[in-house]
Each structure stands twice: as C-alpha cells, then as structure tokens.
Length: 145
Image 1 (cartoon, rainbow, N blue to C red):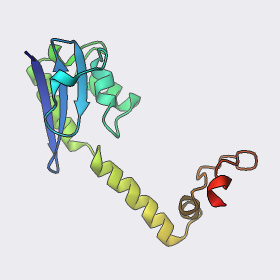
Image 2 (image 1 turned 135 degrees about the horizontal axis):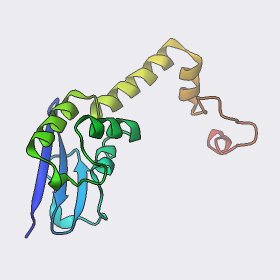
Image 3 (image 1 turned 45 degrees about the vertical axis):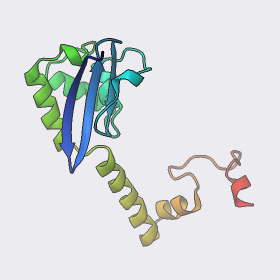
Image 4 (image 1 turned 30 degrees about the vertical axis):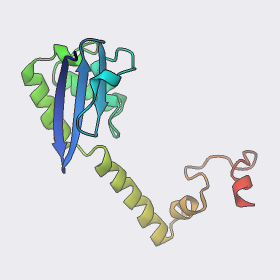
C-alpha cells in the first residue's frame, strides 16, 4: 500500500509533481505527471533537494523559495501546510522551468549561430565557449579527425 502526497503545478500543459512516499520516507520531483511510488529507490530527500531536481532551480532559487514561504530546509513534503503547498505550486507554475527554459536556451544558441557571433561559432564547432584552455586539452581533436 502506498501513501503519497502529490503537489502538482501546471505550466503550459506540462505537469510538475512533487511526491513523497510516506512508507519509504523518500521524496521525488518529476515533470512527467503521475509518479509510481512503488518504484522508489532514492534515499530520503528534503524539500530543498526536491526543488533542485527541476531544471532551472538551483541552490539559490530553492533557498529563496524556502525562505519566502518560511519552510525549514529539513522539512519534508508531507510536513508542509496546505497553504504552503498551494503558494509553492503557484510560484512554480509562474517560473520558467523545465522544457520552457530548455527551449529558450536552445533558441539563444541557435540565434548566436545564425548571427555568426564568436560564441555561436564556438558552439557550432563544439569547442569550449567560455574561454577554457584548448592548448593542452585535446579531447575534442579526436572527434575532428
């Protein structure tokens, strides 16, 4: 028997789900809709780590969200009040995360390639973009030959 609490936020038709499995004490964040609690193999995760599993939410964003809604870093999903859950869901649905953010990043890279900027050319060649050293790190040369 599986006792779960699911928090869902819809963003452009995509459902984000925070699920806590009370029988195993684990928390998981998914972006694919319903989550099967029986196949949980992760150790216990706290709320902060659950938020960080979304693409586009890192340490700073999750800490800011938790402080905004007065959530303790060691608090689990099942321990949250319904008001906190609803507020967190509303904020997550307004944020640009998961597929929307991925699409925006890919569009930015595509735009840089089309305009012929230095960064765009480096992306097109598969070379380091942010000024990393390429003199001694020759891992990319094997793909060129």
